Length: 270
Image (cartoon, rainbow, N blue to C red; front, side):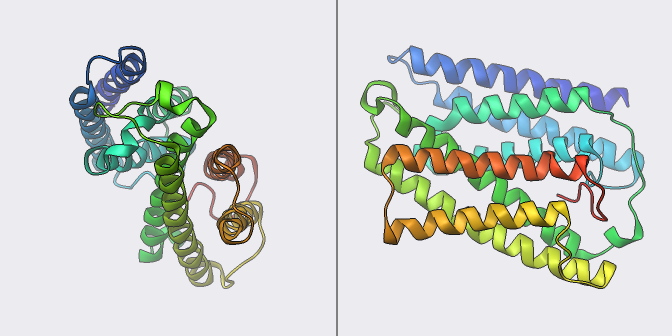
């Protein structure tokens, strides 16, 4: 696995440089680092992709089960989703410091976790697993974008926020948070439906209220309430930022906490 470690640590170098440049851009308001930051996101994603592919070919199965596998696959998906948004949706570039620190957290957590392999059970041999996992990753990536933008609503925006040499006003940031939360809600809904169909095929029931299913539903319910509040009782910018961060924390715990502190039949499937 030395080749796997090589590519994995090359990705780590990219993410460390990404974090440094993202923070430097906040301090140095005269220079534009967007090309360097975008390049580092792409480079980090490429190295993680190669590392995962090497592990996949070596073991003959995808990264779906253990804590280490969930962490590296989530590092890949968050990096890819944020990289695409960074290139095609310029306003998301202000979230680079938060996004890069999140990626570093996943990296260090993966380093501390056991890289060993466990064979996938027969219940994982279904196309619904792919639908469930892909939409779960899209959901978490959308939550990351909403939170990385929304966090700026807690700061003096006109003083600190700069991206591509012009300022974003709070109304633009607030609108983007709502957009990404709405997208995340749709992805999460599809993830739950696909998971229910998979559960019916694998265990003969659509829903069983095990800890992972329960917390996934709680996260979905919190998102539904947050989005409903916009039409009934719109929260202010700071409240919206706190709500977005709360949803991200719930999602983070659901993905990386609940499956590994409880015993349930689809541990680590996201």
